[in-house]
Length: 363
Image (cartoon, rainbow, N blue to C red; front, side):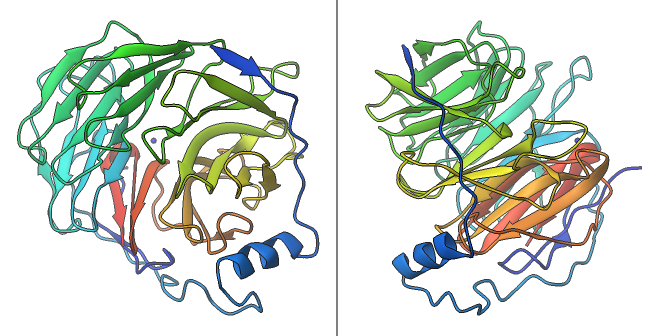
């Protein structure tokens, strides 16, 4: 998602070293920034000079190291600190899935034993002790000791594809069947928050009350949706996003979020590949991720975001694209690994990405 290699970068993420009920709202009219006005206004509001200086001044060179931690597919990664990360993946029928942790910033990875047959799609680590991962078979695994031991919960809800834990107690998860579930006790027990029509993909919850979940387009008459709660999951509202087939969301705060995905047209990229809100979801602006097909995005601040996926609408794997202005503009990085990159997580000044064949890239 030839065995791949991983890599590592200084922040700015240009230098990498491989480490191996719903209320429907009117459709949002997405506006591309004109003459840089929106970018200048946004940077000025954050206190930066928008005259063109480098906001990210690291990460222009890439090198690759093959650590061969696992050759199984890694689908997601979450980094609670610049030192601690957990990565998960797997394939149906392939036996116990890979569950990896690092406590030293990716210098070394430890494979953890989880004795079930599951395909884990998403993971969220609200602290260096606590992580929650969800899988297509409806199982959720949880650790409260930094990954040394994991407990398994079978929710009975198939196709869980997204999870976000804004605190060590509160977690939200979503399924491809339009189900949103919530835990208030550190993922020990779960209850249904909403059962909605969309087929969910990515999720990001910047607080215990505010949470966003993305739905891809299901056809010309069914645009992509971003669904949001502001009361901890009691009520959810949705806005239609016309041009982006959303696959992932990342919120650096309750006001700033970025969503990425492929264009709606698979033959010609006439739409956008990303959307950005700077006002808590009241308005979304479309942005261009250089015509590629990002699978996942992570923003560590209101400025710094990284998207990973494929070049050329999914035809060439290994794409890493960075933004230094909160997702308004993007810059491609050189391909350093031929693997399809499926997950990325940024914390502070560091980012990690994972993908097919056990690829682990980190800065």
